[in-house]
View 1 (cartoon, rainbow, N blue to C red):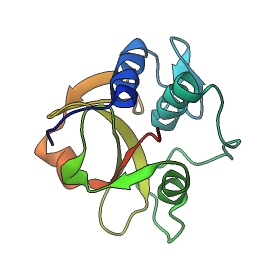
View 2 (cartoon, rainbow, N blue to C red):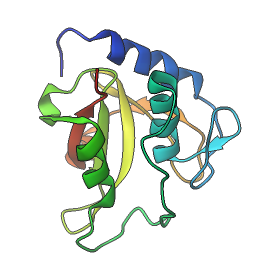
View 3 (cartoon, rainbow, N blue to C red):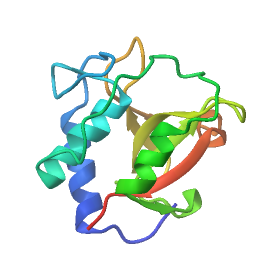
View 4 (cartoon, helix red, strand yellow):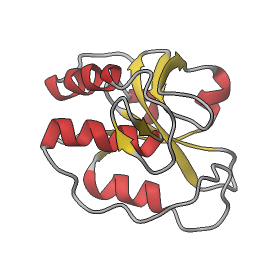
Length: 146
């Protein structure tokens, strides 16, 4: 996970860091007020593009959700450019799944080769290590469109 970042990736990192400390709140997307992992990505999207491409329908808080409806993954594929996870650079979006039989249900912004910015239940938006545990759970990687 190295290379030259685009201006859009740089902007995404700058915006993601503005959200650090924002309390976790399921389905919210307001910097310094509350957000979940998707709310963080939605907020960055609004900062980069001015508006969201569609209204996000309600979704469960359960990160270990099973089933065959990959709603998060399909939405990311529709609006972002999928890249190989090994080629992800700081400013790109990573999607995670709890295990092979769970749907992708968590997202984060890669902030450095071994760091991610994300929100998760019981925590605020934080920049944490992309540990081997997290790395094994990467389902896909995406770049914000130019």
